Length: 98
Image 1: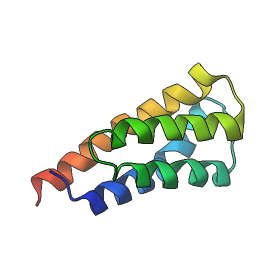
Image 2: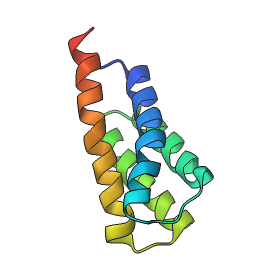
Image 3: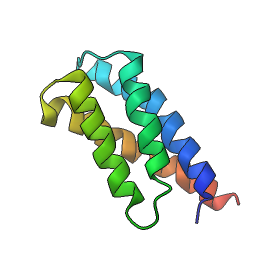
Image 4: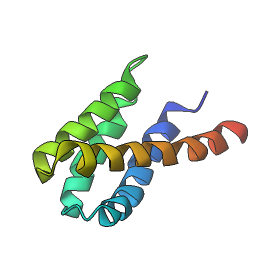
C-alpha cells in the first residue's frame, strides 16, 4: 500500500500537471485557480479511509463543474477520468519501489 502522504502529493501534482493539458485537448476554458481549487481538496480527500478515492473524484468533478460551467460529460468528466488513469502508473511506481 502506498503511503497516504505520497498518495496526496501524487494526486495533487499529477492533477495540476495533467488536467490543464487535457483541458487544452478538449478546448475547455479554465484558469489555473480552477485547477488548484479542484486538485488540492480532492487530494486531501484521499486521506479518508475506504471511500476517499470516490469522494476525491466526486469533489474534483463538482468543483470543476461549479467553477468552469462547461458541459459536464464531455468537458469535465472525461478529462478528470483521463487524469485519474494517468495517476495509476505513478502510484504503481511508488508501490514497487518502497
